Length: 535
Image: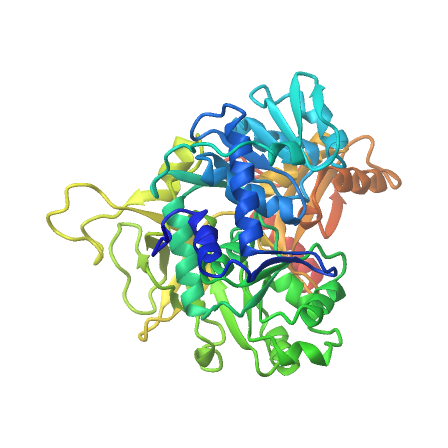
């Protein structure tokens, strides 16, 4: 029996497989391998059956630590089909960071590769709830109490009854850096992810003949969105693990990509390159999310592909996507983050919860179907970011007996008289680097763990090539001398993923300045750094 409308995450794929089974669903960039919708849906159903055979309870967590490949996508949709919760882990993270996520979410299953497992094993000893490791290689058996399962064996399980799932159930936990240093798990329901897919596909005007390039990590909400929006309309996704920016351009040309979504630092790298002429024959739009797009970079991109429509977007992992600027408004309002996406409302509120007047700065608050379920196992952080709307907001309706929760972003914006929004800044110390929210405390903790610094402070600065970057000011530990600074850099490269690496480390005489609360004064250090460097 054909479904008429998807309401669960995996139904986005299943419904397209019923409509157009022979249409291409997935391709690997740079190669000829592909899966059509019928093949992909069958593999997802087989994987879900294999997971059920492990005796997993409804709602248990499956962590996924892989680069972009077919198995990554299959497991991403098999987990929610089986009634499990998907936890995609950024493939760039180091073993200790992966282990923290596994412990925090209590992952019962880990899907990874035979190549990644040896690096992970020492860290996995601190993950007591982990029982099963599914490997995309040939190493079945057991190891240190872990049940190792070969991918092919998982897919060989007989069909079976899945756990019952409804759209209010938890579907995925996406980890994002928190202001306290450790990453927080944003909980998203089936309803959140499906509503987001339909909303984004509507304003990008995605259709079955689109080919979307998945250049962003699938652990990133905007990266995972390439899968959900494509599957909603029956389009193709091209999976790309790029080493150099030119690899992106080659994939755009080779696979005749029609839609590209990326973060400003990648566009900054792409803009000065020579673009193959074939890209312009097919690219219908390019979209930017995860930070401010420099105006000069945008103008260069528009000259490179004049027929492609540019979409500037603003999003929150806690609510998936919030605003976009229609391309026809770009020349009139180049600094605007636009208006609310379909099926969402964006409020600009004062601290007392009342609505700001036109051009009055206030906090961006997102309400609607995309608002997530809070942070995994973190009541305090959830209460800080997810709050009930008060009667002072225009969104409130009299007679309602249950409160409506919205996401209070922590970002300061203003709304002009025409309803367009403008980003003004953040109310905390979080940094936006390559589309990721990065906590200064998380970077600082890694530096302290090296034992090579006395005190340190990390903060965000503008960077000519990256757009935004991390700068560190540190005092000297006994081991940090002229040659010791190289040791500190090497320790950072071992412990931090590329997007969290500082662009610069300056060692100064201590102690570092404190604010009235006795904490290291990052803002003063940042202001002094900018003054020294004339920026």
